[in-house]
Length: 76
Image (cartoon, rainbow, N blue to C red; front, top):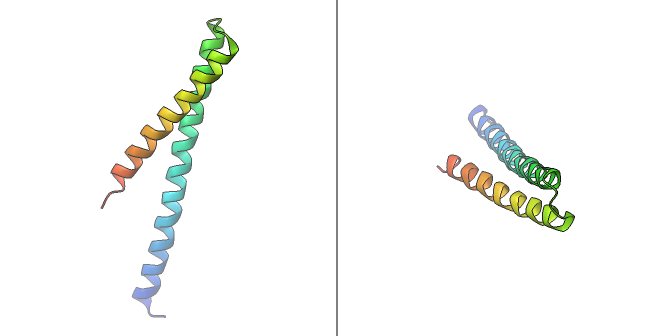
């Protein structure tokens, strides 16, 4: 394998790992947003089902927004 080809392979591997990590971070941000919403609603004496549903909705919304921002930033 020539040096430029090896460098291209390593660059592709690094980009793949970076993409995986950025998706993972986007999902973790969604988890934090969903948990914060659920905990806040429970502290405000909302029914349990309402807090869980709103937390799930917040998870979906925040994760989708984070993934959209990540996709826009990685656009070439």
